[in-house]
Length: 179
Image (cartoon, rainbow, N blue to C red):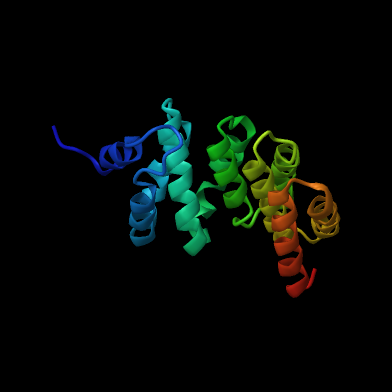
């Protein structure tokens, strides 16, 4: 029996406890060298083992920092996954990724309510990453920009410490780029 690339990626993502980073950085490096590997990693976002799903999201988020275009063919899958994501690590990575992909108006309208809902998540990290996801979506949708800037202004004064810090950073970035 031969071991496929998909099997070896799954084995790499299976290493570690539920919230451990494991070998996600190595999987991200592999995707940066070969963007076609993003397909199998996307599939693992639905893996029954929460640790595998979390590390798949971590690897995709890391790779998309350097090459956001790696996610473009998979934007429908990402939008589908954010709707039912329960794990906090999965949520925060998805929030960061969805803001990096140019979405149509209809796709943006699918993502916005989810990210807004995550602003009330129990996890401060999920909240801060949802803010970043909304700011990212505003780059692709001028109509959304004013609303996001207003939301960021409020949260940078009244949110958790992580939200206040992230809000200030995002507002500066948006103002610098014509916000």
